[in-house]
Image 1 (cartoon, rainbow, N blue to C red):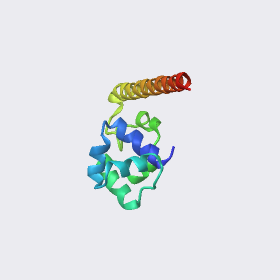
Image 2 (tube, rainbow, N blue to C red; image 1 turned 135 degrees about the horizontal axis):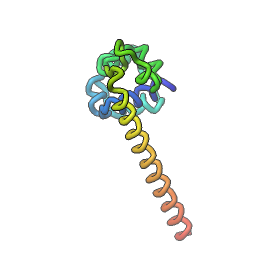
Image 3 (cartoon, one colour; image 1 turned 90 degrees about the horizontal axis):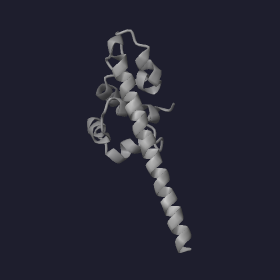
Image 4 (spheres, rainbow, N blue to C red; image 1 turned 60 degrees about the horizontal axis):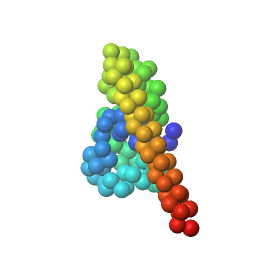
Length: 122
C-alpha cells in the first residue's frame, strides 16, 4: 500500500475527518485529498506533523498495514489498543468495509442510470 493510501486508511480507522487532519497539518482539505489519492507526495515536514496527529511514528504511517492492529502486544500499539480491544478493531474495519461497499454500489447504480438516460436521449 502507498503512503497516501496508508494515510487515508489510518484516518478512516481513527474516525478522523479530512477537515480535522488537514487543520492539524495546517493544509487545505483539498491538498490532503491529493496526498491521500497519490496526486502529490507528502513532504517529510508534513509527515512528521501527521505522525503527531495520528500518534504514530512516520515509519509506522509509511509502512502501515491493517494487520498491524491485530498483531500488537499492548506495547507500541498502532491505535493504542491492547489485545482486549481487538474485537472493537475488527468491528470498525467491518463497518468501514461495509460503508465502502455501499458507496461502490451507489456509484454503480448512478452510473447505470446515467448510461440508460444517455441511451434514451440518443
